Image (cartoon, rainbow, N blue to C red):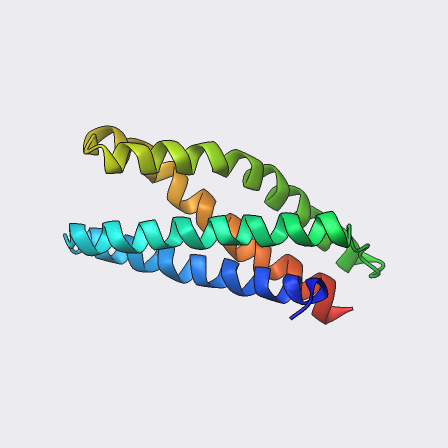
Length: 138
């Protein structure tokens, strides 16, 4: 594997994180607290691996410009903008949510997790969409 393979790795890590997040949500809704905890820690570790891979790629390769034109270009940049803004915001949200859960402050954990989960899911899914649009579509 080379650095040029990392965008596909990043998309895979984002997809895995999204599946883990959905699984964690289902588990907590079913009252399976220990399983929820394990899955959410795995989702966090997957996202950390993504971030390391993403930063490595961009440090070595830089950015790839979107070649599409017309309406698809507007769609791409709209998704990219929301993805980027929320990706920056999600880092502290995830850290606070994880910290509260691990320290057994469940009421406070639950209060912030209601915001963190959908935003984290959006960032993970749109990460895959951005990859597809940038590397597979055009």
